[in-house]
Image 1 (cartoon, chains in turn cyan, brown):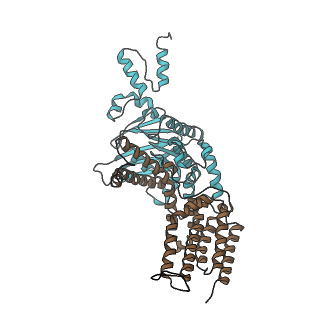
Image 2 (tube, each protein chain N blue to C red):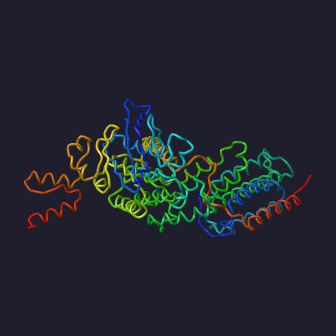
Image 3 (cartoon, rainbow over the protein chains, first blue to last red):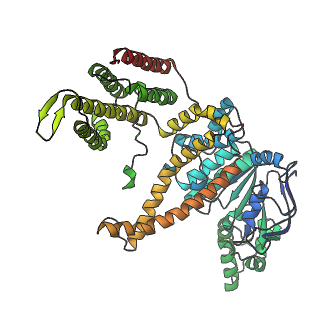
Length: 279
Length: 267
């Protein structure tokens, strides 16, 4: 698989903090994958997101996106076009006075000609299913809708990577589903790489690969199944098990002989109703 | 409660004035402010009046709404009128109270200045009534464009204005939310003596300020993440269309100015 982002031995420290926020972190992100980065508050996962598109620059080490380096100021704009971030607060990243103007904002910044802009705006708004709201003002939209507009603004720039920086944490369950489904679709159909920074483990379960962070370093990485097998490690990282895993553990303690781990509710339900069936 | 707050005073419509290019409207008003000062006799004030009334009718804004807009300045108009009657001592005495005389020059001057004020307010309020705030911002950015050469931050100014416009409803919603939260804990905003009511607003403003700064920080970060780097090399989605009627309207204003210049009392 093609390597899109390479983080090489990066350390980072905020001027106001005593400890390193990131300590010698190395990481590769591959084309088309859905990578979940989980960790407790203060584990450095949001800082990592900001380093990936050059909003922050590493104290030491190097962040490379495709062939560009964030340390090189001239290449920063190329990187920012390729790596879009959806932030946590839906309201505080909506720049335009209407949906159309907001999607246009990024394109205007990158100097896309107007004719091309109009085409791209229309297709990207349709892509996130917001075409009925194209003239709407932000205060008439729900949180989930605003996040979808933010995604439209990013895909209009034809990016290769979308980073969700706790993008669903302020949304209700409906909005959360809207946003994740939209991004899932983009990931599957257009091969856009997704990095989802989250502490929602239910969301991480759906990823291709999970990275668990603690105190600025990677504690463990692997497929959700591998990572969530190690309950002790997750607890050490200050995380809770996803509900279905937790229930599985509780059932096993109770004496129900479940054979394996069940990541999703569906898997668990299947395992339970087939429990007593003959093979 | 805060849903009724009208931002700007824009009234949607499809009149000729609504459809005009905001640059033409801004320029027109700029010219009109000077033209008003050309009038100095009954005839020229009459012509100006016909022009102002025609503009109001063209805008199709309801007269009741216009009247509401004028109400706050009535006090100033009447005050100026009385002041002129008291101060101007020209022409014949119209009314003699012994210790105090009213001259016809004073009456005339008072009427003229009051009319001038009314005309100015009428025509300038037509701008905000028929143009969306964002169009006014765009128009200003274009018109002030030449000042970029002398390092005036025109683009930044326009962006600031449009972001403020975008955040007004958001901040109003937030104010309402904080108010409800405070009211749920027994705060009183609408009753009691004025002093108490003003005091009650402090716990409302503090959280609002704090969250606004947080918003500003977040927004700056989001803008940077989306490749914002100032006005240079930026393209624009919104464009303004200067049409024949815009040139026509400005031409009409110049004719008005010429007519007024010829008919005004010289000497």
